[in-house]
Amino acid sequence: MSETKLWVHGILDALNKIPREQWTTHPVIYKEMVECRRLNGIIRNHILKSGVDVQCINDISAEVYAILQMKMLKVLDNASSFYSVAYRVSELVVSSYRKKHYNLINSKDVSLDATFDDNESDSTRHDILSYEVTMADFSEDVIHTVDLHNAKLQFSKKLATLGWPEDIPKLHKRIGRPRK
Image 1 (tube, rainbow, N blue to C red):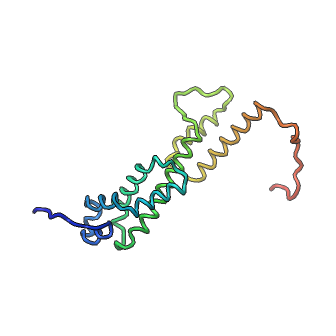
Image 2 (image 1 turned 90 degrees about the vertical axis):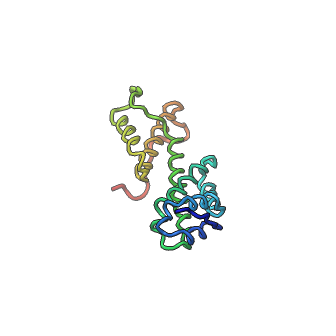
Image 3 (image 1 turned 90 degrees about the horizontal axis):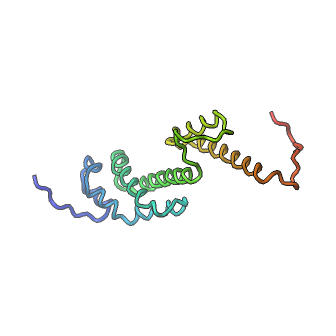
């Protein structure tokens, strides 16, 4: 059976002309997504808003296209809701890249065969290694815990290097409601 040339004008036209069961595998749909100025504009706007490096646009776009075609088109209720789904997928992918980018910049690389400082305790070593293992889930609690740990560590190093400022008293009198 010979395949005839399919002439489409945009992603919505492609979704309307191609049978629904072929949406996840048809190359014309992927081609139209890549060439769609509106979809690429949505992705670019999310990247610019989130502060992710613009050089990641090709990687982010490819991931958005793949997720849309392989996962989201099979659950899409109709072709007219494509852009609202694409907007949310783009937002989530860019958010994921922002978290990856932020954590790669602010955390130091940990190797299992690297030597640790003598002043680091075994629990600190375990926390850092377990952080590397759980890095894939990007839950907010894990990110907050690691950021808090890194901030405390950096602050204590800074205090050890520079000393306590003279204009700030070391003793602090708590005013207000006592802690529980």
